Image 1 (tube, rainbow, N blue to C red):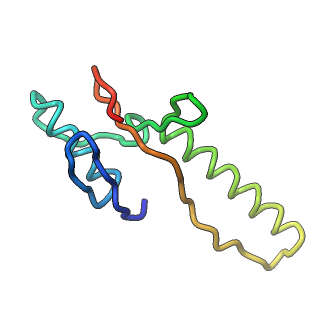
Image 2: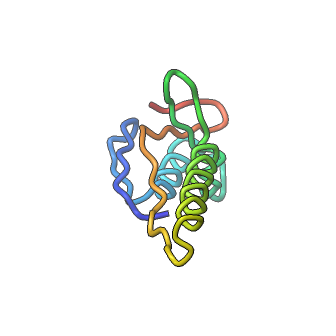
Length: 102
């Protein structure tokens, strides 16, 4: 994942990446844990059209789309190569075991 600026509204802080945001939120809300790392794709969520989606689901959908586009380009230009990057959009929300952030 590329570094990006992530606003954490509940903490009034800014993180340098989604993983950094996950760590800061875990430190604040999961104080009983010894380690504050985890899989942000499994525990990070976004809301789109009123439905909660995991970042893992969004990542998988984007990877499939890029692979399909790359495959279509390769079929028409055998020597061509796609330089697309994986980028997500939407507000990201983290889900600790008992609460949601917004």
